[in-house]
Length: 337
Image (cartoon, rainbow, N blue to C red; front, side, top):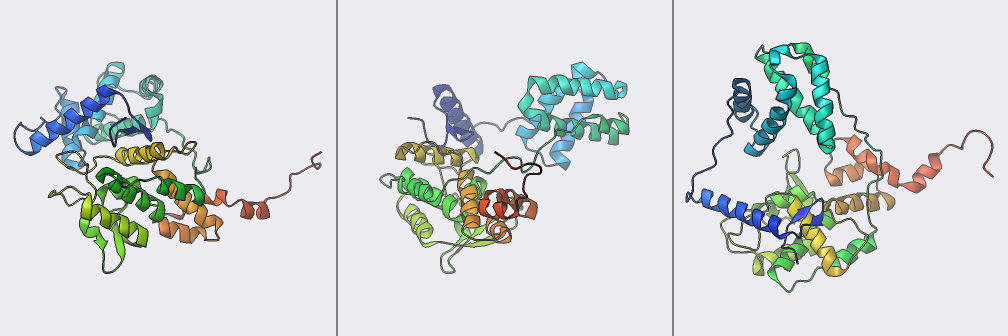
């Protein structure tokens, strides 16, 4: 059986190699944190343009080492196709972009971001012409092009009921599932939750979300009971202030949202639930869809989900089929047979 929290796109990773690599990486991070081994060396480059760019990313953009490595890798692969920045032209940039986007089609949008970031830096440094910034084509994204995936309330309750509480890890997982299902939290919200985010006397929970602006949400009874059971009997004794911790020593908090998706996938596996998306966001979509079908307005749904823009909530307008039937216009021309 796969270890907890190993997930890619909501699917558990079962390969032993990936498990061992991940465990070794966390063990090395633990040793670095304790000062047993030296910290990782910063990313450097022999190319003066690239070295200055990497320093700028770190000092002025606050990029992480992982982001800097990704940017450096993609730009380094482009350099043989382009040559010196002073010799660049629009045609060469487009050819390089098309070639790289064909090699990694799923990362075309990120490649646009990386190339534009590097070109902006070179423009400010006076190393290339400002007009070249417009040579990088945009990657079209079609918003609201698909219906949000969701499940009905009965299936949500079935998933919750499939959570056993015999072991500490199962107690933790049930608390996480209830937070996702009842409050429509994002996986990142659950990952980043701290112990002091819960006001037991006031009966609310504080969630920061994407904007890092704290919002207060009511704490449902069953959610509070599940969290209390986790704190009382299942949470490891650790100095970490994160609410949810891994069950294996050194009891660190989750490092990514993918681990929350892995918990959802494992819950489905335990309960024999099939035909339901395993990602954690399915609870958020389902909460919004079911509220809308129960008569709630889009503005109310947006408030509950803490959307910063009404455009984000607009995707759920398509799931209110009775409302759409009322405003649908007849097909022009002859009536269908």
